[in-house]
Amino acid sequence: MSLWQHPRFMAGLCTAAVLVCAAAPAVFLTAVDAAVLGRSASVQNAYEAPTPRGEDYYILRQLTARQQQSAAAYAPPEEEDRTSMALKMYIGAQNSLESMVNGYDYMETVSTTLQSLAERGVIDVSWAQWATDWGGNQYYEGYNGQTYALDVPYYATDSLGFVTLKRFALDQGSLYTVFSLTMDSRTGVVTQLWISAPREDDTAPAAPDEAGLRAFADLAGLESLGDWAVPDQTPYTHALYSANGAALITATVSPYQYTGWANSSSVVSDRWFLSLSLEPCTPEELPTLVS
Image (cartoon, rainbow, N blue to C red; front, side):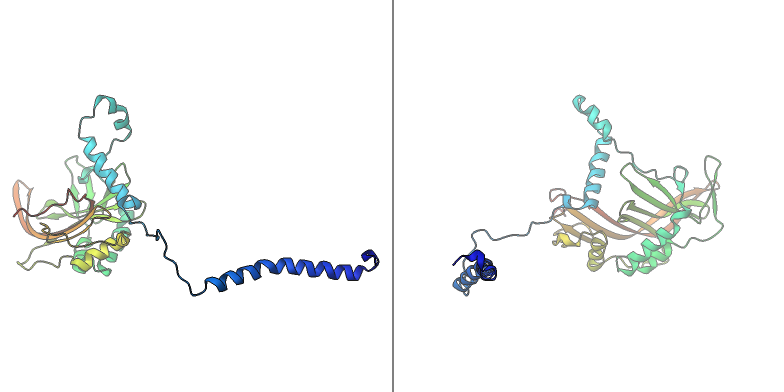
């Protein structure tokens, strides 16, 4: 019998052959699964998640670069390094009112940032209120003869993109700094904060506790370093350290005496200050109390 004379029969044979070939892998895999089901075997090299490091985080890379370049900027380079050092020269932000720029457009940024820190429990809300009590119609005449409005912040930017914002005010006619806030211009992460507050008695305003410092690390995107802990024998009242990230967070609330000069007379004022900072710090650089 010629198969060509029976096309339907031939088509059936072809279809059956295709089905057998298609089913063969499934049958084989099913047999293999049945053979190994319920059996376990040890893995020679189990997978281990990599430990996060400081260089994995943009903000810590930025802070490390600023620390290194700032140190190099004040150290005379070796002859062979002069060209490379010139390319990496760090230019810091200016700090005096006369050298900063009117930051009216940053008022909302400052208020939102400080409010966020207060809402997350990093700082007490009273610190945010003192910092953003803009007052009104206060002006200061600088040594250059220019008049500066004191109901707005002023800002300066360094060569790595860190923005320092400050608010100034008058105490008995003498100019002083109400707050200084440094943040990364790309991410908005706060790296340093300093606030001055009136000192009416010896009861210190609330300082950031451990939970507040952890919230500060989280806002910086660094909580995932996973090993934040209070360092042993630290001289800081409030501190957290991450060995994985080689990063240190510190907070201090302390009294200080402001001294200034106005109308040919000295000005003295008792005040409190809050200092909060995030900085790179290797285990060897970590300060410890000397017994």
